[in-house]
Image 1 (tube, rainbow, N blue to C red):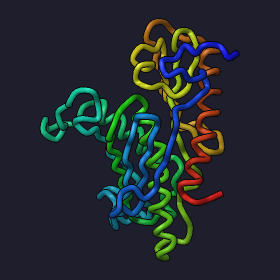
Image 2 (tube, rainbow, N blue to C red):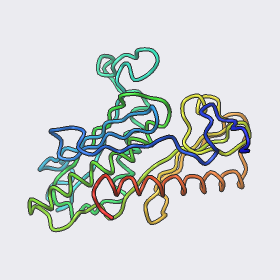
Image 3 (cartoon, helix red, strand yellow):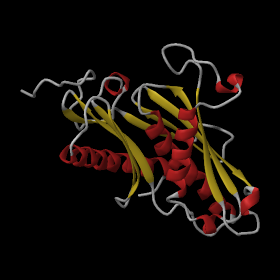
Image 4 (cartoon, rainbow, N blue to C red):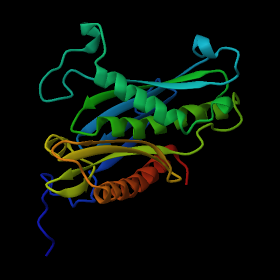
Length: 244
């Protein structure tokens, strides 16, 4: 008889929520994906612009950037639209920079040519892990947008060199667990986000202790969980973009 789970969701420590990646979710975008990690749903849409930021003009290279936002009723209580407040929160700016860095890390900017791709990541429903779902879905949207450029003959090969995905891990009731939902994230002893490439390279790690510092062995366990989780995500991404 399996041991009773300590997690509110009753998942095993190394068990992810049900993840679904739905390509083509935004009809008019050059590439799009609805990333669903359990009850966290993020719509990611890629838009291609035939220009780059002024400081890049004439250099022959492209640029990939991201914007992130949460709909007012993506959470239990309504939040004010940031546009209505006239400024983005520090959290929003930090997350969209993270998404942009993650995608640029796996994109050949010279192969993209002198054009910019914007990734809009809008949280429709939040239950923990919105940034990791955004990165995972945005990678699918970016690849599909670039694939369209290949099919139209604008570029010769897809500039996305490898897939990138992200997953959260944490220490919950003294146990390392994978893919935290909100009840776990809000009471975890430590939480972290891992952005990893399909070849096993690390793009970024964000880790914070909430109650007491966590040990090196605990960190390695979190990294191992993240590697296992992203292996599953890469398979789902490949299925979504239609490559083996």
